[in-house]
Image (cartoon, rainbow, N blue to C red; front, side, top):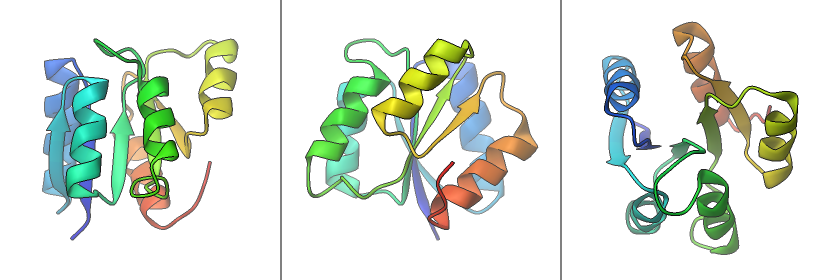
Length: 124
């Protein structure tokens, strides 16, 4: 069973992601700040991280930088999950090194496909 770390500060978005993933058989870990997400990723080594970009404390982009800089977590795929849909935001997210991007509000079919692809090692 794959373990997925959800880093999300919005309670409704967290519940949606958790419920959808658990129904599909994934184990989930939860963090509400970038700092907590980085700590949990280092401690628990999830198979995938779903990272909101707008977080209290450090941003999702900064949290990703910290994960990529640590040899213990650098290979974990990280999906950006964000409402930032402007072209400039998308370019910044891609340039930061996320494995893929999922927009909010979440389209369940697209969300689950992005999770499946990331766990299979497919980028984009």
